[in-house]
Image (cartoon, rainbow, N blue to C red; front, side, top):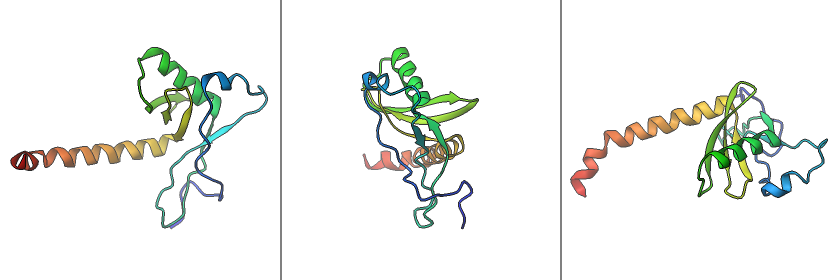
Length: 129
């Protein structure tokens, strides 16, 4: 099965970003892109080629850190060019990876489906507790 987004053989995961102080040290003309970390079906070798400028993700994570009392690394949603992305932010201000809008939506659908299956079986687990 062919990947609907495409694959070019490049690594799907970019290196984690540096701390907040490191971001300003980059030359303004250097643009680092974060690739969507979605790999699809491991058997097909399909990976997403969508990317986003790292500075846009880091800026969104900084806003998140300023608005909320973030005490742990976590996922967060943000809007870039009218599309909602998902990223994993680190407490130190770095970003571990991103999911593009279509893969964010697919990931969230799987999470909702898994949660509903757990809720359906919660009563069965209570019998053994």
